[in-house]
Length: 295
Image (cartoon, rainbow, N blue to C red; front, side, top):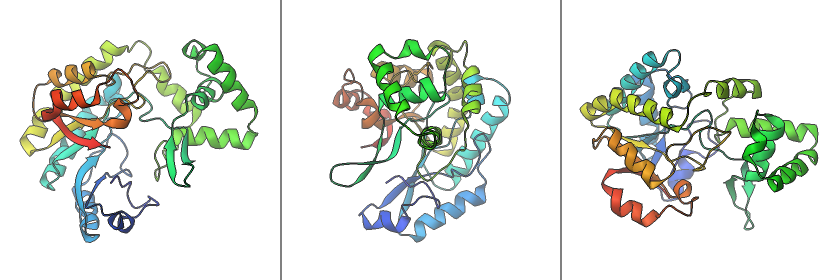
């Protein structure tokens, strides 16, 4: 089961009571781009073990925006990524999930959606996300990415919200992770989007190739398999390129650096959001390169 660390409202004891025997976890408190301290890895590993569980997969070691855009301190951040992989390998962790989604990782519009049976789930609703894009972020060119019907429904949703509800919705959409608060502001999000002007899908894929060429040899040496997570949702978000959405994308990424250490995170939720993805076929054809699974 996924565990978001000590700040997660779901504890390790809760997870153990479900019958799970292992967790996907990470050091979310370490800022993106910094090398994970060896002692922090050992401490988190010991906490998971003390709860009677196994820390089987790291999800995730974030890829900084500098690496995705090749702007600023990207070379230093790649070096730090190598160091983190070495320390995780030394700690006995063999799979590291990461993603290459620009600006926003996986997108949700409700972190506490109630299902009819009373259970709680995460929700992505394109209409409310359109409201965020059009009225909270006020992104230039956003109107062209939504249909007239979607824009009308988004405006109806937005105008029905009181100012405090609008602020809470905007903050939640920017926060992303349950149990983790990134503290991103609308202004910071706009600045991050601006860095991607001129970075199309082909350029972003080239940046991924350069990143993999730099880190896969380290992963091979320390016995770690990398597992890239599909785009979530598997379509353009905020006008940004997405390059991990289809089986063709996955196959191309595996060919960028042809190594068993360059693997996939097979996420049925993300890939299954596109009707043109053959989920069973992807397993049959690319299964030997799947290093982690999300069901």
